[in-house]
Image 1 (cartoon, rainbow, N blue to C red):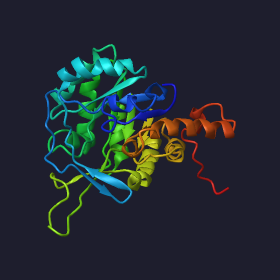
Image 2: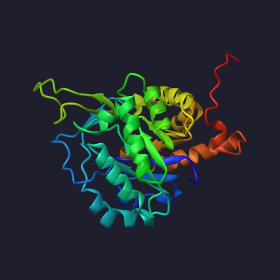
Image 3: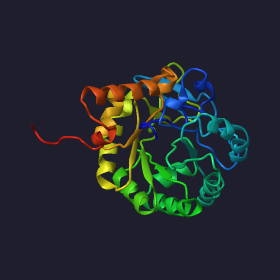
Image 4: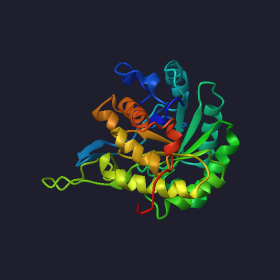
Length: 294
Protein backbone atom coordinates (compact mmCIF):
# COMPACT_ATOMS: atom_id res chain seq x y z
CA UNK A 1 0.00 0.00 0.00
CA UNK A 2 1.29 3.43 -0.95
CA UNK A 3 -0.58 5.00 1.98
CA UNK A 4 -2.64 3.72 4.95
CA UNK A 5 -6.12 4.65 3.66
CA UNK A 6 -8.54 1.97 2.44
CA UNK A 7 -12.00 2.39 0.91
CA UNK A 8 -14.10 0.25 3.25
CA UNK A 9 -16.14 -2.78 2.26
CA UNK A 10 -19.85 -2.19 1.87
CA UNK A 11 -19.63 1.49 1.02
CA UNK A 12 -17.51 1.46 -2.13
CA UNK A 13 -19.12 -1.36 -4.13
CA UNK A 14 -16.33 -2.34 -6.50
CA UNK A 15 -15.40 1.29 -7.13
CA UNK A 16 -17.32 1.81 -10.39
CA UNK A 17 -19.34 4.82 -9.31
CA UNK A 18 -16.49 6.41 -7.37
CA UNK A 19 -13.98 5.97 -10.18
CA UNK A 20 -16.07 8.39 -12.24
CA UNK A 21 -15.67 11.06 -9.57
CA UNK A 22 -12.24 10.58 -7.97
CA UNK A 23 -8.79 9.22 -8.76
CA UNK A 24 -9.13 5.87 -6.98
CA UNK A 25 -5.53 4.87 -7.67
CA UNK A 26 -4.39 7.43 -5.10
CA UNK A 27 -5.88 5.28 -2.32
CA UNK A 28 -3.92 2.74 -0.34
CA UNK A 29 -6.35 -0.05 -1.25
CA UNK A 30 -9.98 -0.81 -2.07
CA UNK A 31 -11.95 -3.40 -0.11
CA UNK A 32 -14.83 -4.65 -2.24
CA UNK A 33 -18.34 -5.23 -0.91
CA UNK A 34 -18.69 -8.57 0.86
CA UNK A 35 -19.44 -11.54 -1.37
CA UNK A 36 -21.00 -14.90 -0.50
CA UNK A 37 -20.90 -18.31 -2.18
CA UNK A 38 -24.39 -17.92 -3.67
CA UNK A 39 -26.37 -14.80 -4.56
CA UNK A 40 -28.25 -13.15 -1.68
CA UNK A 41 -31.17 -10.75 -2.02
CA UNK A 42 -30.54 -9.11 1.34
CA UNK A 43 -32.99 -7.89 3.96
CA UNK A 44 -36.41 -6.49 3.25
CA UNK A 45 -36.71 -2.69 2.99
CA UNK A 46 -36.50 -0.08 4.36
CA UNK A 47 -32.75 -0.73 4.70
CA UNK A 48 -31.33 2.68 5.62
CA UNK A 49 -32.21 5.27 8.22
CA UNK A 50 -30.26 8.43 8.98
CA UNK A 51 -29.52 9.08 12.64
CA UNK A 52 -27.83 11.94 14.51
CA UNK A 53 -24.15 11.77 13.44
CA UNK A 54 -24.60 8.49 11.64
CA UNK A 55 -26.88 6.01 9.94
CA UNK A 56 -28.50 2.64 10.48
CA UNK A 57 -28.31 0.03 7.74
CA UNK A 58 -29.68 -3.46 7.31
CA UNK A 59 -28.61 -4.31 3.76
CA UNK A 60 -28.08 -7.96 4.63
CA UNK A 61 -25.04 -8.69 2.43
CA UNK A 62 -26.97 -8.36 -0.83
CA UNK A 63 -24.71 -9.58 -3.64
CA UNK A 64 -24.76 -11.68 -6.81
CA UNK A 65 -22.48 -14.42 -5.52
CA UNK A 66 -18.83 -15.26 -6.07
CA UNK A 67 -19.14 -16.55 -9.66
CA UNK A 68 -20.75 -13.32 -10.86
CA UNK A 69 -18.17 -11.32 -8.95
CA UNK A 70 -15.26 -13.12 -10.60
CA UNK A 71 -16.76 -12.78 -14.06
CA UNK A 72 -18.05 -9.21 -13.91
CA UNK A 73 -16.49 -7.27 -11.05
CA UNK A 74 -12.94 -8.51 -10.53
CA UNK A 75 -11.69 -7.39 -13.98
CA UNK A 76 -12.86 -3.87 -13.21
CA UNK A 77 -11.24 -3.90 -9.77
CA UNK A 78 -7.97 -5.01 -11.31
CA UNK A 79 -8.10 -2.01 -13.65
CA UNK A 80 -8.12 0.45 -10.74
CA UNK A 81 -4.38 0.13 -10.17
CA UNK A 82 -4.50 -0.25 -6.37
CA UNK A 83 -4.25 -3.27 -4.05
CA UNK A 84 -7.55 -5.14 -3.94
CA UNK A 85 -9.00 -6.70 -0.79
CA UNK A 86 -11.92 -9.09 -1.23
CA UNK A 87 -14.36 -9.42 1.66
CA UNK A 88 -16.03 -12.82 2.09
CA UNK A 89 -18.80 -14.12 4.36
CA UNK A 90 -20.53 -17.44 4.88
CA UNK A 91 -23.18 -19.18 6.94
CA UNK A 92 -20.86 -22.12 7.68
CA UNK A 93 -17.13 -22.67 8.04
CA UNK A 94 -17.26 -24.80 4.91
CA UNK A 95 -18.59 -21.83 2.94
CA UNK A 96 -15.76 -19.62 4.22
CA UNK A 97 -13.23 -22.27 3.21
CA UNK A 98 -14.67 -22.65 -0.29
CA UNK A 99 -14.77 -18.91 -0.84
CA UNK A 100 -11.23 -18.41 0.42
CA UNK A 101 -9.96 -21.15 -1.88
CA UNK A 102 -11.76 -19.69 -4.91
CA UNK A 103 -10.85 -16.06 -4.26
CA UNK A 104 -7.34 -16.86 -3.07
CA UNK A 105 -6.53 -18.53 -6.38
CA UNK A 106 -7.16 -15.31 -8.32
CA UNK A 107 -4.11 -13.30 -9.37
CA UNK A 108 -5.90 -9.96 -9.05
CA UNK A 109 -6.67 -10.42 -5.35
CA UNK A 110 -4.08 -9.02 -2.94
CA UNK A 111 -5.74 -9.95 0.37
CA UNK A 112 -8.90 -11.49 1.78
CA UNK A 113 -11.06 -9.91 4.47
CA UNK A 114 -12.87 -12.49 6.58
CA UNK A 115 -16.14 -10.82 7.48
CA UNK A 116 -17.28 -12.57 10.65
CA UNK A 117 -18.89 -9.42 11.93
CA UNK A 118 -21.86 -8.32 9.86
CA UNK A 119 -24.83 -7.74 12.21
CA UNK A 120 -27.45 -7.83 9.44
CA UNK A 121 -27.49 -11.55 8.65
CA UNK A 122 -29.39 -13.81 11.01
CA UNK A 123 -27.10 -16.82 10.52
CA UNK A 124 -23.37 -17.09 10.04
CA UNK A 125 -21.06 -14.12 10.29
CA UNK A 126 -22.23 -12.36 13.41
CA UNK A 127 -22.34 -15.67 15.28
CA UNK A 128 -18.73 -16.54 14.42
CA UNK A 129 -17.51 -13.08 15.40
CA UNK A 130 -19.29 -13.05 18.74
CA UNK A 131 -17.40 -16.00 20.22
CA UNK A 132 -13.61 -16.23 20.51
CA UNK A 133 -13.57 -19.99 20.00
CA UNK A 134 -15.71 -19.90 16.88
CA UNK A 135 -13.79 -16.90 15.53
CA UNK A 136 -10.54 -18.82 15.96
CA UNK A 137 -11.98 -21.92 14.28
CA UNK A 138 -13.21 -20.13 11.17
CA UNK A 139 -9.94 -18.20 10.98
CA UNK A 140 -7.75 -21.31 11.21
CA UNK A 141 -9.81 -23.26 8.65
CA UNK A 142 -9.81 -20.34 6.24
CA UNK A 143 -6.09 -19.83 6.80
CA UNK A 144 -5.48 -23.38 5.53
CA UNK A 145 -7.54 -22.69 2.40
CA UNK A 146 -5.46 -19.80 1.06
CA UNK A 147 -1.95 -18.37 1.10
CA UNK A 148 -3.19 -14.82 0.55
CA UNK A 149 -2.94 -12.35 3.45
CA UNK A 150 -5.96 -12.86 5.71
CA UNK A 151 -7.62 -9.91 7.46
CA UNK A 152 -10.24 -10.81 10.07
CA UNK A 153 -12.96 -8.18 10.53
CA UNK A 154 -14.41 -8.04 14.03
CA UNK A 155 -17.78 -7.07 15.43
CA UNK A 156 -17.94 -4.64 18.36
CA UNK A 157 -21.03 -6.43 19.66
CA UNK A 158 -19.07 -8.64 22.07
CA UNK A 159 -18.05 -8.63 25.71
CA UNK A 160 -14.27 -8.38 25.19
CA UNK A 161 -13.14 -7.65 21.64
CA UNK A 162 -9.46 -8.03 22.58
CA UNK A 163 -10.06 -11.68 23.50
CA UNK A 164 -11.65 -12.36 20.10
CA UNK A 165 -8.84 -10.51 18.31
CA UNK A 166 -6.15 -12.47 20.16
CA UNK A 167 -7.87 -15.76 19.32
CA UNK A 168 -7.89 -14.81 15.62
CA UNK A 169 -4.25 -13.72 15.79
CA UNK A 170 -3.22 -17.07 17.27
CA UNK A 171 -5.35 -18.90 14.68
CA UNK A 172 -3.39 -17.43 11.77
CA UNK A 173 -4.81 -14.01 10.93
CA UNK A 174 -2.33 -11.70 9.19
CA UNK A 175 -4.21 -8.59 10.33
CA UNK A 176 -7.27 -7.60 12.37
CA UNK A 177 -9.76 -4.98 11.20
CA UNK A 178 -12.33 -3.27 13.42
CA UNK A 179 -14.91 -2.17 14.08
CA UNK A 180 -17.95 -3.16 12.10
CA UNK A 181 -21.25 -1.47 12.91
CA UNK A 182 -22.88 -1.39 16.34
CA UNK A 183 -26.35 -2.92 16.72
CA UNK A 184 -29.10 -0.32 16.93
CA UNK A 185 -32.67 0.46 15.94
CA UNK A 186 -35.04 3.35 15.39
CA UNK A 187 -38.83 3.62 15.75
CA UNK A 188 -41.36 5.78 13.91
CA UNK A 189 -43.35 7.34 16.76
CA UNK A 190 -46.30 8.12 14.46
CA UNK A 191 -46.85 4.53 13.33
CA UNK A 192 -45.11 2.67 16.14
CA UNK A 193 -43.19 0.66 13.54
CA UNK A 194 -39.44 0.11 13.28
CA UNK A 195 -37.68 2.34 10.76
CA UNK A 196 -35.89 -0.68 9.28
CA UNK A 197 -37.54 -3.67 7.64
CA UNK A 198 -35.24 -5.99 9.58
CA UNK A 199 -36.07 -4.06 12.80
CA UNK A 200 -32.44 -4.02 13.97
CA UNK A 201 -29.50 -2.73 11.92
CA UNK A 202 -25.92 -1.58 12.16
CA UNK A 203 -25.07 1.93 13.34
CA UNK A 204 -22.13 3.59 11.58
CA UNK A 205 -20.74 7.08 11.17
CA UNK A 206 -19.14 9.65 13.51
CA UNK A 207 -21.39 8.63 16.41
CA UNK A 208 -19.46 5.38 16.90
CA UNK A 209 -15.92 6.74 16.44
CA UNK A 210 -14.94 7.07 20.14
CA UNK A 211 -16.01 3.48 20.72
CA UNK A 212 -14.05 2.34 17.67
CA UNK A 213 -10.89 4.20 18.74
CA UNK A 214 -11.10 2.63 22.20
CA UNK A 215 -11.50 -0.87 20.76
CA UNK A 216 -8.65 -0.38 18.27
CA UNK A 217 -6.42 0.71 21.15
CA UNK A 218 -7.36 -2.37 23.19
CA UNK A 219 -6.84 -4.76 20.30
CA UNK A 220 -3.52 -3.18 19.26
CA UNK A 221 -2.28 -3.79 22.81
CA UNK A 222 -3.34 -7.43 22.69
CA UNK A 223 -2.21 -8.74 19.27
CA UNK A 224 1.08 -9.03 17.42
CA UNK A 225 -0.36 -8.51 13.92
CA UNK A 226 -1.25 -5.18 12.26
CA UNK A 227 -4.59 -3.55 13.06
CA UNK A 228 -6.82 -1.76 10.56
CA UNK A 229 -9.05 0.82 12.24
CA UNK A 230 -12.48 1.98 11.09
CA UNK A 231 -15.65 3.44 12.46
CA UNK A 232 -16.77 7.00 11.79
CA UNK A 233 -13.68 8.30 9.99
CA UNK A 234 -14.59 11.32 7.89
CA UNK A 235 -11.53 13.60 8.02
CA UNK A 236 -7.74 13.39 8.48
CA UNK A 237 -7.92 14.09 12.23
CA UNK A 238 -10.26 11.12 12.69
CA UNK A 239 -7.86 8.82 10.87
CA UNK A 240 -4.88 10.08 12.84
CA UNK A 241 -6.70 9.29 16.10
CA UNK A 242 -6.92 5.65 15.05
CA UNK A 243 -3.30 5.53 13.91
CA UNK A 244 -1.95 7.02 17.12
CA UNK A 245 -4.15 4.58 19.07
CA UNK A 246 -2.47 1.68 17.27
CA UNK A 247 -3.91 1.23 13.77
CA UNK A 248 -1.41 0.64 10.99
CA UNK A 249 -4.07 1.50 8.39
CA UNK A 250 -7.59 2.92 8.37
CA UNK A 251 -10.76 2.38 6.37
CA UNK A 252 -13.22 5.09 5.35
CA UNK A 253 -16.81 3.89 5.05
CA UNK A 254 -19.99 5.87 5.73
CA UNK A 255 -18.27 9.17 4.89
CA UNK A 256 -18.15 8.02 1.25
CA UNK A 257 -21.91 8.50 1.04
CA UNK A 258 -21.59 12.11 2.15
CA UNK A 259 -18.44 13.03 0.23
CA UNK A 260 -16.99 10.69 -2.43
CA UNK A 261 -13.67 12.48 -2.02
CA UNK A 262 -13.46 11.79 1.72
CA UNK A 263 -10.82 9.01 1.53
CA UNK A 264 -8.57 11.11 -0.70
CA UNK A 265 -8.94 14.07 1.63
CA UNK A 266 -7.83 11.80 4.46
CA UNK A 267 -4.77 10.73 2.43
CA UNK A 268 -3.85 14.36 1.71
CA UNK A 269 -4.47 15.45 5.30
CA UNK A 270 -2.23 12.75 6.74
CA UNK A 271 0.54 13.81 4.36
CA UNK A 272 0.15 17.45 5.43
CA UNK A 273 0.25 16.46 9.11
CA UNK A 274 3.47 14.50 8.61
CA UNK A 275 5.08 17.26 6.59
CA UNK A 276 4.18 19.96 9.11
CA UNK A 277 5.80 17.93 11.90
CA UNK A 278 8.73 16.73 9.78
CA UNK A 279 7.81 13.08 10.36
CA UNK A 280 9.28 10.94 7.60
CA UNK A 281 6.80 8.04 7.79
CA UNK A 282 3.28 7.52 9.04
CA UNK A 283 4.54 4.30 10.64
CA UNK A 284 6.22 6.42 13.32
CA UNK A 285 2.75 7.45 14.50
CA UNK A 286 1.32 3.94 14.79
CA UNK A 287 0.66 3.31 18.46
CA UNK A 288 2.43 6.52 19.46
CA UNK A 289 -0.20 7.40 22.05
CA UNK A 290 1.17 9.15 25.14
CA UNK A 291 -0.19 7.97 28.46
CA UNK A 292 2.02 10.13 30.66
CA UNK A 293 0.81 13.33 32.32
CA UNK A 294 3.38 15.58 30.71
